[in-house]
Length: 67
Image 1 (cartoon, helix red, strand yellow):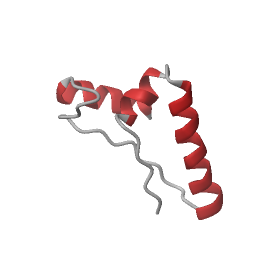
Image 2 (tube, rainbow, N blue to C red):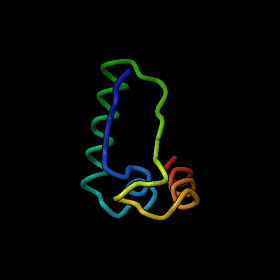
Image 3 (spheres, rainbow, N blue to C red):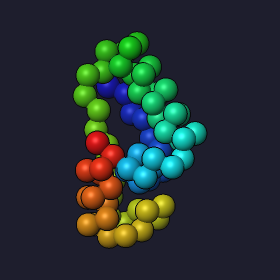
């Protein structure tokens, strides 16, 4: 199992605007999958995120959109 961390990943992935951050996440996922055999990816957010302040509904919607 690999842990790939990113500030407010659900917003980054759902918005799709920050190509550099998305490319970085993708590169780290590629290593996890191709070199370490990972076969499950989880996108996780939390309701009191300082980088994506919007409450539980915003977090849930962004997480769903990110997947």
